[in-house]
Image (cartoon, rainbow, N blue to C red; front, side, top):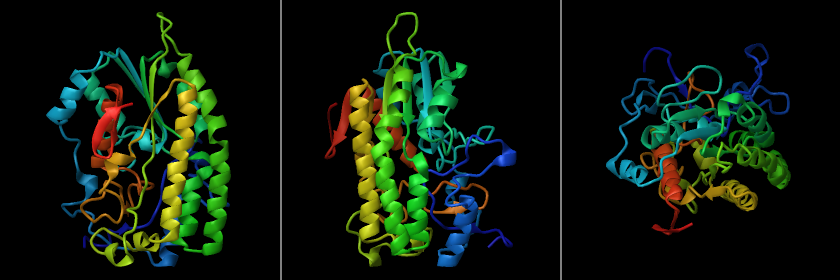
Length: 348
């Protein structure tokens, strides 16, 4: 250990900061709580704490953004030239968990994110990188799409929906950290209710983006990237152990609640795809790329963050740098008109 430097392992999904000023910052207030701050407390109470040397060689926080592989470069080279590219969305687009270097401000925009790295291989003339960690759909519309910086792009990628009502933070607080059946059931019901409202919140965002046409009057190509199921299915508790950087909350999630949370993610993706199809937006299913790389698939296999440092809050259950490579791969194949199904690429 390095003095008292520690890493507290606990659970948080789609968290981040709001658009409030620093003086009024209240990340994902949950029933009067202060988001990440109270998640620390919840982890402490539940015993889900693990101390890890912050300078371990395998600490993902020390990783650098790699040069893109020849395969990804070749995929990008076969695509049309996009003159203007914009990225909008929540923490899955800002890059929480990728640890490729932070930008300025509270949005935690990360150089290791799939959007930032897509820019490096697509090489557009202009690039608007606008996602913000913790942004619900309404703020994506007002604070990102309806800004001068968004411009009139001919390509847009986005993630959205997981922060509406702080659904996943509430669910993980109740079902994993506190492990209260009563509170978990209530949180899941709230999640279901929020899911029903998702299409109506996405509609104005899609419409606003598709109306951002250039001089040619052609709407942009829009990719809405989905979320991924977090836990491996059917993993016995004995095979989802607490060791290394695999932490006890992962074991707590094994069983019905783990499957219920996974199913809610599936339903969010389904609802998003149905609404996207109505507006000419391409929904990109990234989930197949994560087969064998979910939480409880093994310490070295997971492409989802499973620990939280004292310096970077809100990254757990977000894609790692490898996870963002998968998102990038899915985006490039979608632009090529392909999707991954059962290990093979088929037409969209």
